[in-house]
Image: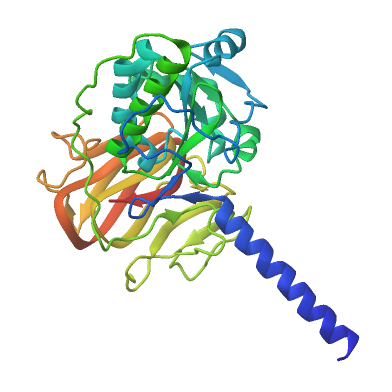
Length: 376
């Protein structure tokens, strides 16, 4: 084999592996709830004081590279970990899959904190604006989070856990061994039974009175639709290996492009209209420029993640969005969405999944940027 051919094959393989790793590294689970990875505790097994062989379990890593602490201090958090059962929740505040888990996690905190459970929210950001402690603090307050939250802005703790997903929950026993691992949404009853079992182990080991068995937290779980549009990314970096931009102009990293309105809209692809700047995380409108986004989707729920000031008029199948499917962030009187902080906005919330063409007409108030569409 000629050397130049051999070199081309090797380089091609390296590039393919690199793209695959990039795709895996930024996986937000906008799909059916992922399967559970159980790390060594059967939540349905009878409770026993018999010693557990922990030789095959990993210890929970130290939290490293933390930029900020909310609801705690470094010294207080280290002391509280001590002999607690610890649930590490790796999340980020604009991720819809993460947000759907929070009612369960905050309920567990309220229910079990006095019994030895410590919940730590490890906030590992997907987008740059999620590194801002003030943005995270607003989200923590909005969602009623009272347990400690640490800002893992450089993903050092994420890497220490060898994690690749949002959300992900690791539960460590009172000696620090990771005994349970859950990827994605769902599995709430199973996770809570694990918490109860590890708290019982802790009580037996410490010689304290175990709490009486309690009913599991009862919260209606979000029901995903079987067939729906996948998550769509507006940033050229995140769109690697999952490019659903239908505009013929395509992605143009770092450039400001005039996008023309398409003659037709293909299913599960989004189309930009107007002047948009192509950024790493998303697409933004230059000051003084308004824009449009077109999409033909299938889902019962549509969300967008945006930053900057803007007013969005929502059209569905060419008409103003109707009240019966308008999302929680659509003003009931005007039918408009006003974006005033970087976060996730709910655009459509219907009873069942269906296919529609949606148009977002954006009046740019300054610094408006689009990051993702997500669906349910």
